[in-house]
Amino acid sequence: MLALQGFTFVILLTIAWQDFKFRAVYWWLFVFLLVALGALKLMQSNWQVLLADMKYNLMFLGSQLFFLMLYFSIKEKKMVNIFNGYFGLGDLFFLLSIATYFSFFNYVVYYLISLFAVILMSITMAFFVEKSNPKIPLAGEQALLLMVFMLLDGFVEKMDLTTDLGLINYFNL
Image (tube, rainbow, N blue to C red; front, side):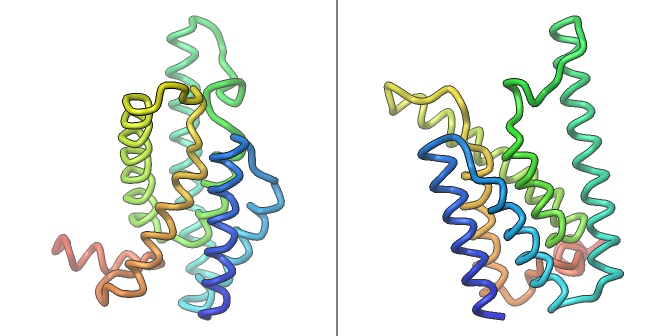
């Protein structure tokens, strides 16, 4: 399991590096990430849990993308393809890949925290760096944050990204 986690970290670091440097990521890295995270999930659960969590995560992601498309379509007063300048395919592939690993509530929490962190980082970079690229390396920054989450998962006893029990116990639900 440790070797697979190490392999996953190498993939995440590569995604982050490519996204920061080129604002583009090789598509096959997301395939490796999907397989690696799926294998890690299966080591801690089973196919039924993986597929159920993945289904709910993809439904959540689909609804987010739909509302994003709806928002920009209303704003522009015409139908907008959000993948033409608003949201990168690499960002989509990253969010699809990690849907195999997280339980539903952990996916939502990670999604919200990562977007908030990316916004803060972008504002900070715009403030301190004169020539900042207007494109945000969303997948790269989320990849680094996923590494932090996975490291915390390994060290914090009650934390488990693959099941919602930790969140349920934490919030006494």
